[in-house]
Amino acid sequence: MSSGASRSSTTSSSTSSGGGSAASARVPDSYVAITGESTSKCGYCSREDSSHTYGMWAYRLSPHVYQDLIDHGWRRSGQYLYKPAMHQTCCPAYTIRLDATRFQPTRSQKKVARKMRRFLADGVLPGSSGSSTGATGASASAAAAVEAAAGDEDEEMGDDAPAAEQFLAPARAVPSLDTAPPGSAPASSSSPAASPRKPTHVDLATNAAPAEAASAAAGDARGAAEEASPHGVRRTTPKAKKPKVGQKPGPSFADLIAQTESATEASRHRLRIELVPAQFHQDTFDLYKKYQVAIHKDPPSRITESQFTQFLVDSPITFEAVPPRSDAESQTQQHQQKQQQRQQQQRETTGGTDEPPPRGYGSFHQKYYLDDGRLIAVAVLDVLPKCLSSVYFMYDPDFGRLSLGSYSALHEIAFTLSLRGQMPPGLDYYYMGYYIHSCAKMRYKARYRPSDLLCPERFEWVPLQDVVELLDQRPDTALSEVVASTSSENSSDATRIAHTAPGTAGVVVPVKAARAINVPDPALVADALVDMAVVLHKRQLYRLRIFRHNPELRMQIKNIYTRVGPGIISDLVFVAV
Image 1 (cartoon, rainbow, N blue to C red):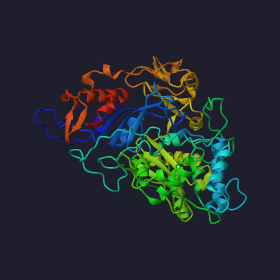
Image 2: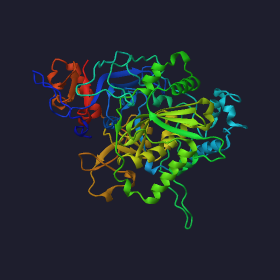
Image 3: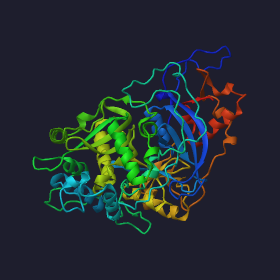
Image 4: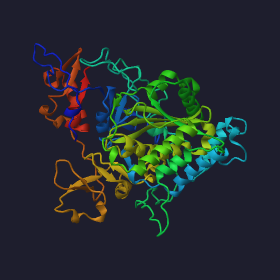
């Protein structure tokens, strides 16, 4: 658990006559309202009233607080934060991350990059006999392109999009926050995060599908049917092949992507990729509407600008500028020159750059432009202190044969490595959302290796390959436990990547047999553990201890406590209804 004191603002509020205000202490700058339990139709198995989550509406979150939340199993859809109730929901979802520094693309993933490279060089879409000019609509319809992509079993998965209502905010009214919190300033119009305000109505009938449900569609699939075990998960992590004596090592993965996207005078197409703050742009909305209609079969009348904005533009994550890495001088001169040459080549040939404008944490849209400005894809991303987090991806169905969903994942992994060289130390991971072992369509994420799953009980990371058999036994299992260790030599091969448990003497290893997840009872949480939580009530900040007359609020915060622990509780301000 991380301490929130260092990330909270030093703003203090005046002390009320009752002495209950949060005075002169560090005050959190992340504001949430608890929405509680939600039950809905599952977006993966399509069973009615079988998906169970717990939620909060976030008015504003610092990047560090949201990093802590996703490291405790939470995700966001717009400004709505949700966490699966693993012991109740039909399709348990585990947070999955990829170590970008150790990623080695598989043969099928390299094939996706080669497909893009050939298209940019020759202008011919895979599976077509002529020029890509037909992709604009002359030679094939969008439906035909999607069908071709879905039929390519080496690249994409089946075209079965789960229901769109998964993980949306409950239909009941979301609490309002009519004024900015004490001591805070509204976010600027250029900031990618929305300032605290009264949220728009959340309607379960809208089609704001979260990234996890939508990513199972064929064209949006982030992986391929590759060499794998019968379970869809390879048991061993691939190792980089060592070059033979006298043989020069091949290009790195980052170089492979850079070479794919670079252009020459003879190139038929140029790909320009820009990272911009998450804001409403008409071309992005038009692409989203086209994508939803063609891929997810949504009625056009249900796709509105306000629904799109709430789903993929609004973000509670505040932009936080960060200085350049202090250890940049430690890079070799050769590496610096190589990186500068690659960036200069991209600017000259494609006119684009891939750096955050300006450098910092926050929510962004990564936009893929072809040639003179045709938008063919958009990725919604959160840049956080430890990771690049994928939120959603959409693309032009006319280019479905390019496997853009798979290619964007490769580009984002390379982008994570680029960020790692620019940002403060620690940004090493690419977060792919949730891994759902019980849903065959979602197992493709395991093919990006090496990946870890978050234990829903201990909130520790465990190598995915070590827990496949546990997940085969039961989909909702604890993944890790602590074992005593007198020396590092006692660690067996089964504990390949050992994690030291916070506050304990031992090594975190996968559990030996699948077992039920230990779910804390919020009624057993002592009042003293939540008494110091900060509550915003009638434009004034108070400690929870003065709300003896509101047992419902106290129980709600205890529920959050069991889902995040004390460190994050101290980082949040709870908006009282």
